[in-house]
Image 1 (tube, helix red, strand yellow):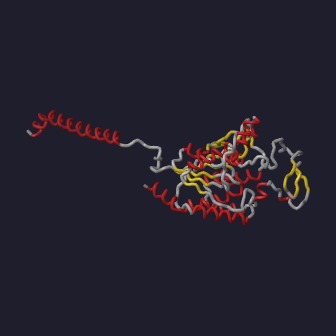
Image 2: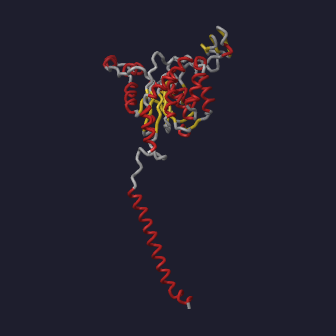
Image 3: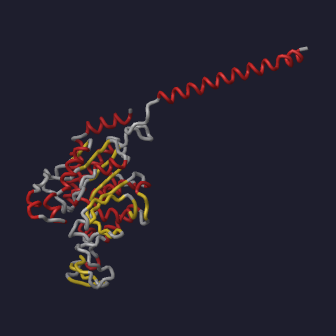
Amino acid sequence: MICVLIWQNLPKFAAQFCNDWIMKNCMFWLWVWIALMCCPAVSAQDSPTGRPRIGLVLGGGGAKGAAEVGVLKVIEEAGIPIDYIAGTSIGSIVGGLYSVGWRAAALDSMFRSQEWLSLLGDRDKEQGDKILSQKDGVTYVFGFPVSRRGSKNADVLVGALNGDHVVSLLQKMTRCKDSISFDALPIPFRCVATDVNELKEVVIGSGNLPQAMRASMAIPGAFKPVRSGKRLLVDGGVVNNLPVDVVKQMGADIVIAIDLSQEEQKTRDFSLKETIGIGGWLDWVFSRPDIDKYQQNRKDADICINPRLGEYGVTSFSKDAVSEMISMGEQAARQHWQELLALKARIRQ
């Protein structure tokens, strides 16, 4: 009898079940649709991690780059995560190493222990005790190469130094010898060089990382340019010594810039250039478009740390000078401590 009643009412039970299931699921999807419509769109200030993305900019300045290491110590102490890095000249060296995993403590040790004169001058230690010597077609004075006319590495590019020792060191430290995308590094990285023929900025985001860093620091006249296809690349400081715009293009929402400039930079008068109608390098010397870009980039940085380094300059590579500049960089960063803490609180929200 019970089975008969169930059988007779089965269509009614099935219909009721279907109605209930449809109503419940329709209401569910209706609420999902309402929630999606009410949620705000993802803004430029949001990242996949749910916080603003932080860009670090490292300016050029030769030996003054030691101060950047001191600044990095304080940034790490404040707990600021870095999402993107852009650097020029020595800033490309510090920034490139930071992007592959070297942190402030290790960079501190590297800067203090490095024999900078031998490194930058490609000094051959075996020839170091001889006033004048030759080896493999290269002429040395106290171990420093002064002529490569008889060498297989000889070329006609203008510049006293090849920078071979620099590239060798960077290859060891970065462990990068092949061509890669710099977006694939632990921290995405860009470095700035200058096309010596067209005097145009070249932002390098892929290729051989040590060679890119070497190109960015190729001070005209001191280091030979780096060949890149049909282009000859020299120091990026010629056109963009504080590449805040570059790190913003990478996607940074907030920028911390380390500026190594020690003097106020002012745009020069155009009247003389226009009167004598010059062009090329002389045109650049008179108009200095790099200063306009520098001034704008400095304004666009959210936190700009500018260590005052006194008597120390681009060639101050002595151990005492390096040690002192690291400390000066740390002191300069601590003057921005409250700004860094405020940034830390902001990205935690």
